[in-house]
Image (cartoon, rainbow, N blue to C red; front, top):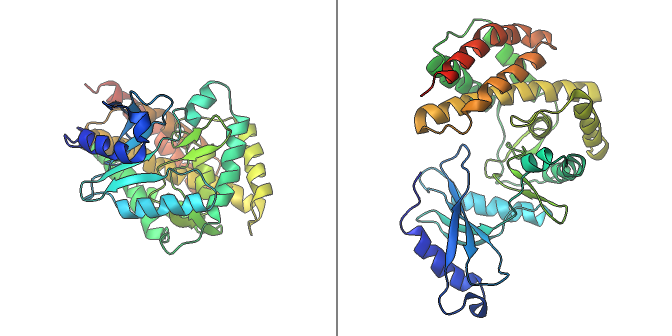
Length: 337
């Protein structure tokens, strides 16, 4: 998506209000660095003032008002900050054009931290923040309904299986779909971020976690964000580590649920979420030409198949993924221009 032509002028005018005049100098200016886009229609740019020595950087967000609920984004950012979570402060907003100037929470996400061997400290901090996030209660956060979970699984069958791979969906998928949805209803419900993974969590130099992409928060299963964090689409943990961090979460959370039920829900929620994710990855390529996630489809399908074999309700799904969907996806993606 192209940067709106009027965004730089808006940023310049806004910086004059945000930064001290003495810091800007007589001829203020800034550099814009485009940041990677995920699944939404929003685009992001790091704003680096040129002449303000030691001045903070900012994030400029173009969030089209026709497709994004920017007033709710602003409300949720403030709500989560009020509960001690490091969501960005909104310094300025032009809601008519969908321009927002935000705090820059940092450049180093959890994916980069994991790659550098920093795992335990970020995960422990993220789990502590997750417990705090789950305690947030607001009328601005609606329920994550069973119907919505079903709609998300339809993204997998429609966009990946049907459109990209041109495969038929077997009859047994319906039973797996119902089991996955039932698992989301088997644990206590609380506020969920919905994309609490390594690319939306920033590991900051002060040992705190910056949290972004929170605008779609809902009240849903307590297993959801933990599944997103530990069974990440972009990083694979060993099973011993997964068990350790799940126990850590249960030690911190005041959850009215036995460990076995919760562990099962985490796994089945992870399957549901990853099926939705690969469907979105396919849709992003087909509808918007975005290739960033296309290479994640095959490895994520492999993880779903391995995990699905552990549960009787998803065994047939796992076998179909392994025998039909995964090989077809590998061939089709390798042949993409």
